[in-house]
Each structure stands twice: as structure tokens, then as C-alpha cells.
Amino acid sequence: MADLDDIREGNKFGIGIEQKNPSFHIKGTGNLLWGAKDRMTRIFNPQTARTVMLAFDHGFIMGPTSGLERIDLTIVPLMEYADCLMCARGILQSSVPANINKPICLRSDAGTTILTELNDNVLIDIEDAIRMNVSAMAIMLAIGDPTMEARTIANLCKMVDLGTKYGIPVMGVTAVGKDMVRDARYFGMASRVCAENGANIVKTYYCEGFENVVAACPVPIVIAGGKKLPEKEALELCYMAINDGAAGVDMGRNVFQSEDPVAMIQAVSSVVHQNYTVDQAFELFEELKQE
Image (cartoon, rainbow, N blue to C red; front, side, top):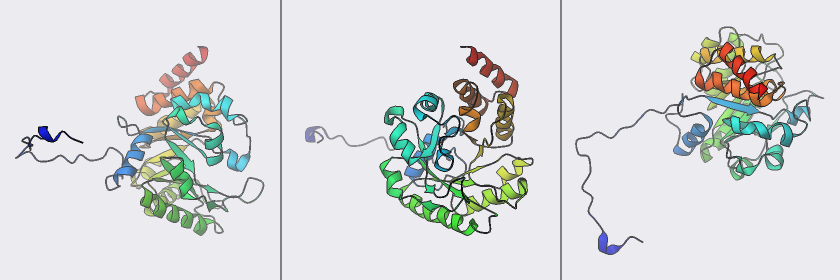
């Protein structure tokens, strides 16, 4: 308890000085509750308002795909260079060191694998996300899939309801509908649907006209890396996305399947946070690869 013999009257009230209410540095988060803002700040660097997310949730539909055979050997050495880790709960519990002190974006739906029809997903219990102290929850949306679209949008809405209750942001992950053209019109619609239904972050793909996709989405967009590209092409993808307004990347295969994953994630980070050009980032990659 405070010493009752030394209670001093306050006298510095700043009369005449208006209290500052600074705007928040992350797009679309100004009206979130404190806990959600705190979690978003862990994901998005306060200096750049951008993020390098390392995605290694592929195994929940693909199993031990190339680069993810041993999480402890291939992914753990990359974690210190990422701003946020995206994975499923089984891998988080079994293979991610609890002292890594990195924000987690937890894959929070689960369902079918690549052996059957994808996207028939159900939600995991939000209590798992709370117990694991995650910073965000990722939910997939199959916009344009006549069978799964309504179900996946309902999954997002339910998780947004729960996330709002407990102060945990939700990331909408746009899967590509089979019958939809992969262009700005489609990704713009899919991203906006995520945001309209309460997603705090959207993960989607880069495309021609991406600046329109970003402009029409009121929350941060991070791009998926997609299939493995040659390193310089992957860095060019990052550069173009950031230049067109993306708030970061959520890359997996283009990092952990690289010829030098540790060098690659640092090169990606140089584009996202230091505004490196493609040539500068690729030069950094080559230098780090020799160390």
C-alpha cells in the first residue's frame, strides 16, 4: 500500500492543454478495443506499419510437404527474422518454442485435405486461441465456390464475433474460387467481403491492378507468396505489392523452400521494412547466402 504519511496532492493537470488522441498507425484499427490494438501492434511493426509473416500452416492440408518435413530443423531457425508466425495449433504446441516471443496468427479452421475437396472447414474452439495467447486468428474464405462460399463466410462471421468479444483480431484468407478469374475484380471483391464481414486483416494474392484492391479494402492487406518462385522473382513480387500499398507479406514456400531460407527471409524483410529495391534485396540475399 502507499505510505499514508506521504500522500501528495496532484498539481500538474495541464489546464488549457488539450489531451492528445493520436490516430492509430494501422489501417482500419482506430475503433478497435485496446487488447485488439495491442495484438495488431505486435503483428505490424509500429515504425513501418508493415509485417513479414512466416506461413507454415501448409501441413494441415498437405502433410509434410517439402521444407516442412521437420519444423524444428527448417522453420525454427527462421523465426527470429519474422514479425509474426502463422501456423496450426498442433505445430504451435509441439514445435514452436514458447520463448521465441513472436506473435502468432493461428490457423483457426480445419477440414478437408488435398486428397478430397478442399474448403469444407469447421472452426476450432476459440479457447485454444486464448490459452495459446495468439495475436490473430486466420480463417479461410472460398469466395466464388458455390458449395463452400456461404459456409466459409459464416465461419468468418462467427470467429469475428468471438474475436471481438475477446480482443483477438481475425485475418480473412481468400482462397481462389474455381470458376473465378484471378484478377483485381475478383481479389478486390474477395478482400472487401472479408473486411465487410469484420476481418481485421486480409490475406490475398497480388495481381495486375492490385492498387485498386488495396484502395477498396479498409483494413491491411498482406499478400500470399503462392507457389515457389526463383528468389529474385519472389522479391519482385514483394516489391510490387508493397509499392502498390500492401501492408506486408505472409510467405511460406518462397521462404522455406528457398536455396537459403535464412537469407531469403531477411531479404524479404529488407523490401518490406527498409524499402529496398529488388536489386538491392537480391544483392543482400546473395551476400547473406555466402556467410
